[in-house]
Length: 294
Image (cartoon, rainbow, N blue to C red; front, side, top):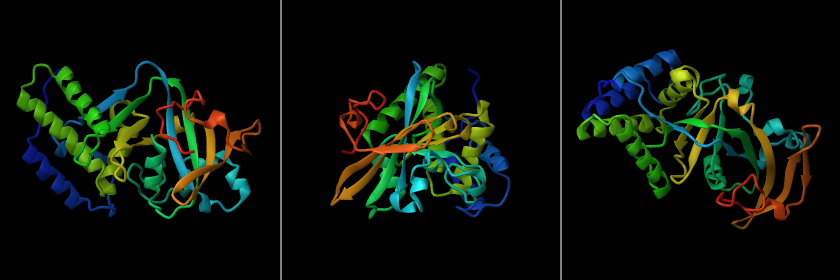
C-alpha cells in the first residue's frame, strides 16, 4: 500500500484547534461537504479510519427507545413508523451525525445505552424497539477509538484497530504506525466531541460521499462508555424489520415489561403480555448475551 502524509501528534492537535475555532460548535455556516474535505486536508490529506466488515453474514440488532410521554394518541403508539427515524421534513436541527433535512436512524447496541442517551434520568415509562437486518455482510465505518473510551469492551475494539494498522501497513515503521493510530484517535475525538458542526459534516460525507457511501457509522456513546451507537443511513434503515416493541415502566428503580407489541398483517402493532419467549435465550432473534430488562 502506498504511503501517505501522516501528520505528527502536534500537527494533529494544532489542526483540530484550528477546525474547532473556524467552525464553532452548533454555529454552522458553510457547505458540509466542503467542511468534510477541509477536515481531511487538515488531518494529513487522507481520510483514515477503520471499516468493520462482519463475517460471516449475520443479523444485526439495533435498539431505539422512545419516551412514553411523547406519544399523543394510542394510534401513534401502534404506528411502527413512530419508532424509526424522524421524517425528512421534520428534521430541522443538526445532530452529531446528521445535517438539517438529512435524517439518520440513530440506535444503540444495548438497552442501557439507549436509556442513557435519552438524557432523561426521571423517565418512568418508555418503549424499547428492536430493529433487525436480514442476514447481511454488515459494514460500518467506525469512530470508536477516542480518549473517552474507558471500558474493556471498547478497548478490545481498539486492539482490533491496532492489529488492523499492523496488517494493512507491514512496511511502516513503529513510529509511523503510532502516528496512524493517533490519526484514528483524532477522527474519533472530533466525531464524539460537542462540536456538531464538524461531526455532522463528517458523518454526512461518510454516509453520502466517502469511499462508496457507507450505510452505517458506529461510535462509542458519550453518555455510556460501555456502549456503541449507530447512525444508519435511510437506504439501510428503510430495509430494517421492527421485531418487537416493549412498553416498559419503572417501579422504583426496577424496570418491568408491561406489554409487548409485534407487527400484524396490517403493519400495525398488536399488543400482548410478556411471556417466556421474550426472555433472553428464548427469542432466537435476540441472543442471550444481549442485555435485557425483565
